[in-house]
Amino acid sequence: MSLPENLLPNEANPAWMNKADNAWQLTAATLVGMQSVPGLVILYGSIVKKKWAVNSAFMALYAFASVLVCWVGWGYRMSFGDKGIQFLGMPNVALDQKFLLDQTFGGYKFPNATMVYFQFVFAAITLILIAGALLGRMNFHAWMLFVPLWLTFSYTITAYSIWSPNGWLSKKGIIDYSGGYVIHLSSGVAGFTAAFWVGPRATKDRERFPPNNILLMLAGAGLLWMGWTGFNGGDPYSVSIDASLAVLNTHVCTATSLLTWLLLDILFFGKPSVIGATQGMITGLVCITPAAGVVQGWAAILMGIMSGSIPWYTMMVLHKKLSLLKQVDDTMAVFHTHAVAGSLGGILTGFFAEPKLNRLFYNATDWQHYCGLAYGLQMGRPGAGFKQMGIQILGIVYVVVINVIMTSLICLVVRAIVPLRLAEDELQAGDDAIHGEEAYALWGDGEKFESSKYNSVHGIDEFPSVVPKAGGELQMV
Image (cartoon, rainbow, N blue to C red):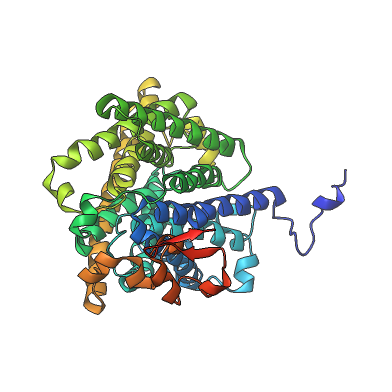
């Protein structure tokens, strides 16, 4: 029986390529990209004080662009290419036509070009998450240097070790379905470490840092949540039943985590905090990420309860008791939402991972090789379960050590070139001093708006409906 005409292979659609897999992989990658741009751009720009809105949003946008250039230049091949040293691939460009149009690694049925794009958006969001710890005081020129250096000397190491078929932790059998280690634990530890070296925000900002637009913050959070459909649903690298399970588990865990955090806020503080609910949403997304397609639905709910409560405790209680946590000014609390939640997810994956689901994901012939502790005990093979738990914990230690060391070295190198922290006068002024632009130009001083060449490409005289009120404030008429 012959194939339908639209499924027949040709020069543009080789026989090894599955059109459905390729289409879903490109779609999933775009969903993840939209988590960053515009998702985190909006979230960062709205959750900070008004004077930091432009700077915070632009840190995310810059990182997205910078990572892509570095990724195709050398980052992708260092993370997924031929073996260079024990924990790193050989640097090489990913721009050659022959390479990009060939079938990607692992026998997956789409071209390298699709894989390069898919893995890029994960690398980009990792740097953007690190930025969350540094909002409100990092020198933008230092950030411009930090992004390519950290991608090159930190991200590539963990990505190669855990995700590359040649990586040593990958060969040991670590389970990191979609980046609980490579992305979230890495960004949480690196962000906290970088925040230590950069130093705190201005005292006034640290004491009071209200969001400038909570509704926009929720819009950014919504893009982040729904984009996770591609984040976890794309990692089987095929249109499979495992991808469907991963998507459903992701949303179940996230909703449970949000509700748990919300209930704890009401119970202990008396009010349902919108910002708190957003944090609970994030910890749920992070926690399920290493486990999304390898645990059952009931386990996703239990993980959501724990991801909504344990990071809540570390942020709301433990943070105020431990001197190191109090000393480091982590603006968006990425240590709690990503390092703590990511570690928690990795450990719970080692406990709840279902061997048959791992067989679907890893295409392993010996489906008992990846065996969570709960199932090892149930099947009378506790050794296999404890082994998996040990590998998961080893992965956490490895990622923490790599990121503390490499992030510290990178910050020291950058500090030798430009200051890591903004000058005091820039800290007081914010966006206008750094970029010459402000987020809400029409809400500021009328005289300043009229004389500024940055706040609009048009002169104020071109807008007869905008006139100064008494006292210089602008109003619409």
